[in-house]
Image 1 (cartoon, one colour):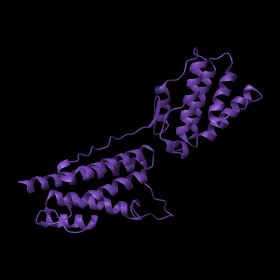
Image 2 (cartoon, rainbow, N blue to C red):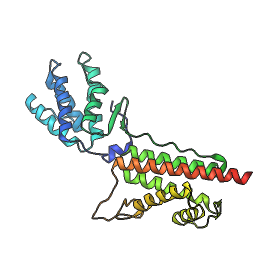
Image 3 (cartoon, rainbow, N blue to C red):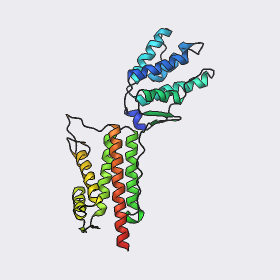
Image 4 (tube, rainbow, N blue to C red):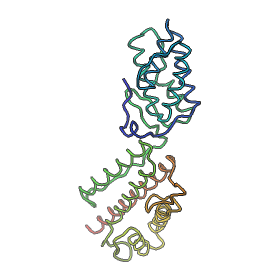
Length: 282
C-alpha cells in the first residue's frame, strides 16, 4: 500500500530528488533482491512501482538497467518516488516474508542525509518540519467567536501550505492574517488617543504615534519593517506581486521564519487587544 500524503503532492511535485539519493534507494533494491532466489522478480516488482505499469525486461541485466531509468524518471517528484519504494517493500513483505526489508529509520536516514524534507511515518509520508510553529493564543472576550475561528482557520491553512512545500503561499496567508488582526484596533483607545485608519499601514502608524517611546512602538516598528520587505516587489514579493524576471520566492526555511515571526506579532497584537478590553471594562 502506498503511503498517504497531501493530495497536492501527487498532482504537483513538492520537489525533485537528486541522483545521489536515487542511487541510494537503488542500492537498497539490490540489497533486497540479493536475498531472493529470483532477484529478477524483485527488480521487476520495483520496476512496476516506479513506472506505474508493467512490462517484463528481456533479461535480468536489462531489468536492472530499466529499473534505474524508471527510478530516475520518477525522481522528478520525490514524494511519489518515496511512496513507490515503500509500496514495493510492502508488497515484498506480503509475498516474500522471508526477505529482510529496510524500515522507516533506514529510509528516513537516506532522506535526511540527502537533504530531502520528508519523513516516513507509516502509513503516512510527512514533511520533515525543522521548526515548531509558534502557538497563537486568541483571547475570546476581546475579539469574539467568529474572529477566533477566522484566525485559527488561517493559521491552519498556512501550516498546510508549509507542509505542501508552498512557502510563498504560506507567507501570503499569514501576512493577510496579520493585516486582518490589525483592523481590530480601529476606533480603539490606545496610548494617547484613538486609533484611526482602515488599512494596516494607517492603523500601525496611528498605534506607534499614540505610544511613542514604548515597547509597543518598537515592536510595531519591527513589524512594519518585515511587512514592508515582504510586500515589496523587489523584496519578499509575497504581498503585492514580484518581478517576473527575478522569480522571487522565499525558501521553505525562510517561510518558517516569516511565519513564526508573524505568529509572534499576532500574539502580541491580540494581547494588546485583551489588555485594552480589560482596561475599558474596569
